[in-house]
Picture 1 (cartoon, rainbow, N blue to C red):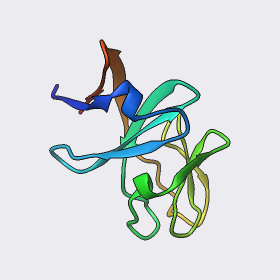
Picture 2: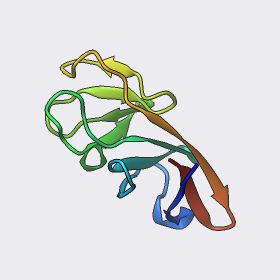
Picture 3: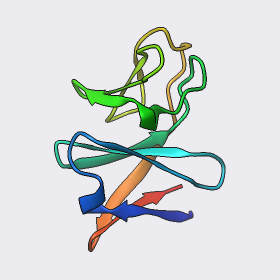
Picture 4: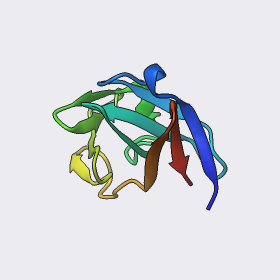
Length: 102
């Protein structure tokens, strides 16, 4: 399994999102109250980059039309997105680095 360094943990403070390029497509890495998560970066509604959205109530909220996906699972939490969950990726912190398994 390939691994991608998303950046330093300090570069992704709580409540923020960061887009990371990876083979097979972009990934959004976020920090929910000190816990890192990663999922596919493309909203299933209109193709927006979720990294341009925000974290709210445990969900990533798409900045275009407000579709929401659970940070913990990538599951669709609120429409207007198509009924499709997002691919979730394993994340670990190694030293100061946030590492995503793709």
